[in-house]
Image (cartoon, rainbow, N blue to C red):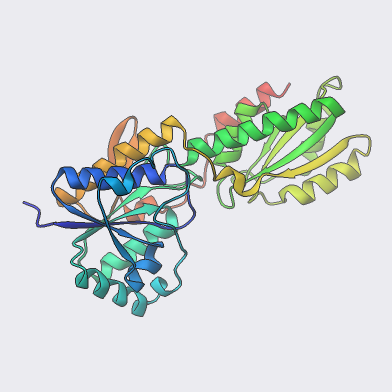
Length: 324
């Protein structure tokens, strides 16, 4: 039988739509199992500094539809040090927090993994990142909202592109992962998609533009920010090679992170939030709680944070087929 009486919950790293839904699920399922739930403000920085708040049903009312995170987030330099983690442990002991749920991505779980190697504190993770680059879950919280935000923006950009016969290069988030670019690019009908996992061959892109339909009123190229060339360089090279094209660059930036989470993200956050609390009560620790083929899945932190370096090659083939 679990001796856990007080669960801490924090959000860390980049914010992702659906984090609030996950917080809500952790708090309400904790209360359902007669536990105390403590919110840790500003991620690991708040753990180091003892920024704790008591959470009840009312504190998570009317937040499931909100983007961002009510607990705030912070990239803590202090927690990267052994001294900082020691302070965090003392704060947890002082406030009688027995276990922690960390909502975040690769960096957040790297920190959690280091912490549990040093201190015997049960910690589980919930995958909250728009990049969808964690191993052990089909989708991460925030990814579905992010790609729909991209598609919505590209649809609007295409209206302008068609009105002026323009070629738009649209740069989306994805410093290390091209999954946002790949899926949103297919959904938006992009002529080409350039991602970090597949090194860009500029001559191949030129050939595609040369051989493409000349009567198309608009052309959209989606570029992940982590692509080996990047939006600015690609735009410059296309302008130089095709001076007859009216070529523009649009960088979507942080608009991709914001807004109301989609139903898919809310449901995923709710499922893994409840499962995280139940995992702690069942004695699990050091694992990310994900969803694989519709079922709850547990992945050790050191495996979950291994970056997905390959994408489904068939998706890239689909881009080629549909760009005719």
